Image 1 (tube, chains in turn brown, blue):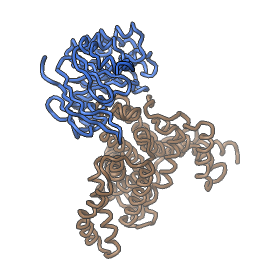
Image 2: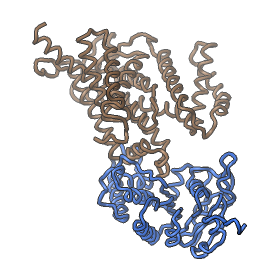
Image 3: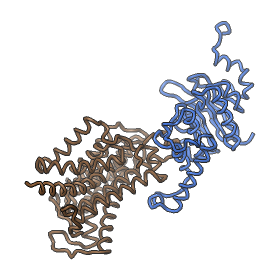
Image 4: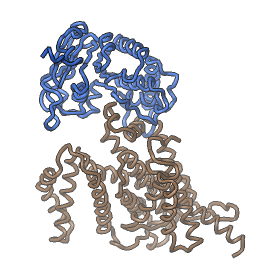
Length: 374
Length: 258
């Protein structure tokens, strides 16, 4: 390989690495926010991202009418129409992921904190009855009816199990997280039209080369992803540092008890934290489908683990850390894959994490959402 | 004396087999400075925690502004108008002094989530007003010169005052100070006494827990004395000072007197 070729490859890898890193960084923000406020690793966050990819897809196909890739050619739009389509897709992803994250908090975590267990009990009761009904009947309508009938008695049972005002042990949160994660992924697997297969999504944007940079072609989708991610992150940082709610989030992150005494509604702040993380994941999901044109029920798993790695790498609980960790991981993975071969990509990502944690156990920028000032 | 702001009625607080408060009854009048004193372990802080909703009393009731506090969450109690400081300072260490105060000011703000997200005009106005209000309080407490410093970097005396400023920011009808003079030199205590008087002059009602007798005697209107979870005396500083039960509780009863 000539020097020139190595140089070209290096630049190519940098561009794709930055785009991948931007997506990791956006998802990592969700892990970091929740960890900063609750000291909890929200392992179901990856599925919030996955749900976002499907929301983007459904927005594009069902609402805008763009065909799936395999169904034929789509006359690409340009100008304002394109901008409107892109905005609709990202909003679809953000709304669904945001709502999903809020629901997750209400159902899987809040009852364990000893408050608001009624909503959790009702939703869990419905899913329990629904799941049991799958054994007896295969038609969805019957399942839903059985689920609804079963809800009330099972909810009463659950409410007896959740004792009001008791904080569950930390392990319970982790188990709940893993359970919620599996439940969401499997539910999507059952409901998605292709079941467990890889799913080609609609291509919204023609992947034209936008400009040439030092001899490397830079594609438009990569540019959009990096710019979009940076804008989202700036907005988040401004929100956390400049608004009343952001101040509440930082107050709870630093000292929950004192925040309560000062009149901060901690449950509400936690809800907002989940909402923000979900919205970021939804945006990341739209960007992911923009670049990769595909999704699947378990697409969240590896991406979630990688984003979590990015959050830890940068310093979990630290907003700037998530950003840095995302880009370091995206670039490192790409360069590593080029040197050692594509099959080593994931190995390299996790070795990178191990190496950083050996020398800096709290990540590159250190922990604490509280200190995240930009 | 005016009306009662807070009344504690027959409150008993038990932790397992330990009775920290037993049948405690007292009231605080609007505009007064009430001292709550007693030897170590007498139940002062427990009493404070019951009033501010950290603990729920085993029996008895706490009534604030003619409404019972039972069943309210802590942030709701703060919204009703009870503010407190802590014996061991609990600031938000990584926020600046002014931000610490603004967290308190935020209680009374009305901007919705949506408003904050899109940066509505109302949100901007409330942020600006909040900042002004916070600065005013810092000035009142005499610590405005370090408003932009992280709370963790402030000197001890500043941190104590910042905590009081933050509590005042919630516009409380009752301000509870838990040993505000802990770790102060006599000169600083003197300053603190002046400060508490000035706070009252602004129209606040103050409940003061204090270990230091000279401070309590100098600044309070009335004193409630706790010992082993029971009230052993109530009255003006002069009355309490000469009460034999109080003297015995503080100095111990000589063997030959028993």
